[in-house]
Image (cartoon, rainbow, N blue to C red; front, side, top):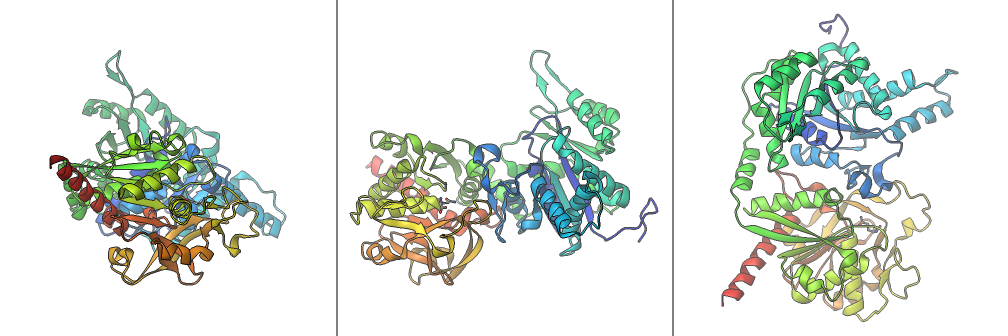
Length: 551
Ligand code: GLN
């Protein structure tokens, strides 16, 4: 096949790039996910990929304060949290090929150089690094026959780190012509004193793109105020972009409204037109719209306290999104309160937790804040408040039960106290001699058998499931009998490794801990059964509490 510029097209796959300008945190991930969602609704097979321009091989070793939560794919890659948005919006399963960093690109190139693959050449950013970037982009197009590969470039245009990516896109655009479309997301600030919206930063950002040989095809302007047609016209004129390709993205009450807002303004139609693909009718988003309708009309709240050590919302992104999916389907508004475990004490726990309808004990690493998590686990157990422990959260439930019910005063995880006489959480043999920190945990999807007759079997409606992991330490099987006899049951087990994956106390309202991370598998159209049941129980508990108050 030959394209409009007389150049041959390698495949039928089309490539969409999403870049950002002016400032970071504009929501490129949500825009990329929305584009994916809209093209999917038209029947196309899509995938979404993220390039992060930092030198780390993956974000697994990064503190959540740097880039928020670390998301884990089914095939065990630790990735940027934007991959979570891609999966939650579109229901696709991402893999290690969907997440790249500059560090990984360089490592691949350097490994090839050491292997002698470059036959004596001098290795340079152009062409070797840029070729590697292009190969990683095309890999997704060439495997699984995707119609569209959407590639989000992390960082902001103008950063030194972004330059090789822009060069790779420029080359792809030159090679493939219309099969490549560039969507650029910028910011239009509102200056209160002047009562004006300012387009100059957008103009500068586009200039920066042009300096790199890239003309954006579509501009998405993030704004807190509605932009007039006149202002959009001005941006179109200064930035060489068609008026219909200047789209605004105003702040909306829910991120899940964004695809609908983009569709209304014709973002997907504009992309197709740019690529010379017939546009046709605007598709109905069907169940997505029904989800939004439930979200908009929910009035009553359900209150969940997140007990964790990071007081930044991105650190527990997938958990809060999973809670909010579940609340929506129960026709409730999710009210999440962050409770810093570092500052929880026996004196203030009642004040901090008694108003919650449910408590989530969050994942984490290291000793900071764990005594607060143990206190929260005890409070929830004793007061019979629905409680969900996730990964480290489950381990804290086990430690608390060991200390208080089994009477092992120093029960602990060897992660926190290597000298404990009761290592109820310990390293599995497979982890004993691991010294590198990066990418060496138990990562990705593992099967889990559910005990017949258990609460979790009932919740999943199945005897077996598969969930994603990100941890090094495990429930110590030596203690299994003591726990079982006293009422904390290991109701999920990994069949191959015989590791405990789920603990529950059946006599309580909802007291379940999972060694895996169910939050990585909840999506808008398929909310996770554990979150559904937990939030449903929390809502019921709220009603029970208010009935008691009335009496
Ligand atoms: N730190 C714990 C472990 O490595 C739990 C990890 C987590 O919560 N993701 O096992």
